[in-house]
Figure 1 (cartoon, helix red, strand yellow):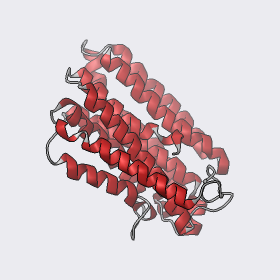
Figure 2 (figure 1 turned 180 degrees about the vertical axis):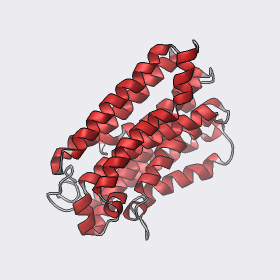
Figure 3 (figure 1 turned 60 degrees about the horizontal axis):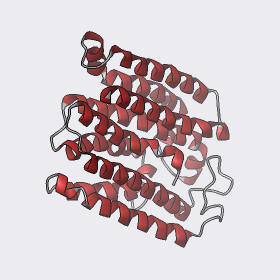
Amino acid sequence: MRLRTLPVSIAGVVMAIALAWWHDKLQWTPALLCLAFAVLAQVASNMANEYFDWLKGTDKVGRVGPRRGVTEGDIKPTTLRLATLIVIAAAAITGCCLLPYGAWWLFPAGVVIMLAAIAYSAGPWPLSYHGLGEAMVFVFFGLVPVNLGYYVITGTLFTPIVFLASITIGLMGVNVLLVNNYRDVEDDRAAGKHTAVVIFGRRPAVVAYLINGYMAIAMLTPLWLTAYFNTVITPAVLVVPIIYLLLHTALWFSLIHRDGSALNPLLGMTASLMAIFTLSLAAFLIS
């Protein structure tokens, strides 16, 4: 399930919930359903990724990253495949429960989301094998959960601030994948998996990591200005971006000075920082 990465899917829905509350439009039932769907979709994607990476021979015994159950023989491939199908079914059922809260196009949108979760690592042209993993994360863990989640939760289309918030979450999510691919670059190159880090190299990856964090905060400039110049949000919220940027810079510094398995904690730390930022901002928006 790769629990340390789940903040990536949770953050987008939490942001949508907080913005819906801030705009006095929150409906809890679709909000909780959105949260469940997002988590189930990511778990399904994670499981499918492990299964198909094993099938393609991408994951090797004794890999630098966290232990892979199927590759190491801890889990039978058939068991993981069945578990993946069960989680996909649970996500599909949860998604269908959201249909009464939106228009007809939620159904094809849900189908696209589930197909994308599998196409990330499966099919004749797996997206993560062709440098599109980061783009997928940006869209399906940033733009989609925040904007689509806000629509389902409130019954109204997203606003400019909601859209900017979705870019913020998307950029933070991309950084989690960048750490993962930065760590695995040699294994991926040997296996023929052309991630963005394999294509462009490690140096551009660490530069992108740093820039993404600062751009993520810059995207919410209208929100920070609102907090500073009027009382719609308490000015104390400005401590959230300040602390995020300090910790983000510290993680970047660690990223450029670590290698191999020493990078594993940074993956969880980057995801945790994303969660801390989202929950802290949400706390100010709903207070």
